[in-house]
Length: 174
Image (cartoon, rainbow, N blue to C red; front, top):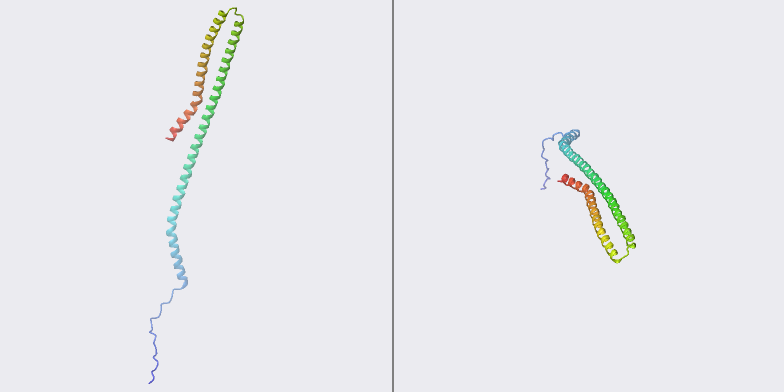
């Protein structure tokens, strides 16, 4: 007996539902993409706005700091100019006072020399020399005091603008 070949039967399944048309799938995907975009646009816009606001605030603060630094630098330059002008004027006054003292001392020396040529005795020469030395020591002491006072005034006048500017700068900085 020969075996007859068995027929295999394919079970019958329910008929498949008709597939969605491709245009409906594309439309659905586009709608889903639009929803995703809409959902991300608002947070991104908010982040962009906050970053923009932070940058604008930073730029405004930088400009204000720059203006403040420029004003401070201009004031410091003005203080240095005033200081140098006061120092220059003071040095000119000190030099004038020193030249005046030199002229007075030179005239006193010439007067002493003239008087010493007219002396007849050694005792008179010693007395004249003692008197001349005493007068010159007194004159030089007075001249040194005058020049010292003028120097102190010059230094004070030259430092005053710088001291004021430093006090103002530290007051602002604190």
